Length: 99
Image (tube, rainbow, N blue to C red; front, side, top):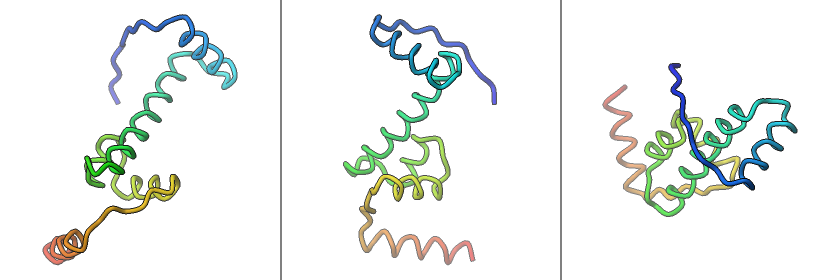
């Protein structure tokens, strides 16, 4: 995976928090920020799904994971499916096309 360098400004409290977190985890600040970004993507995906602003597929894209992984994440966080009967029928129709 290609990486890019990003420079951001944070206030003193956020910098102290990030430095403390990195020290606790025995990692550098950059890694701590990357982990927080990953977690933030997952939380954003969950919130959008719960508000019906994203489908499971879109939530997975936001989180940067597969649909099956997103379903596991929903289960881990106790997120209930907001699927309607029509969604199930559409899924069955799609599966029939594949098989």
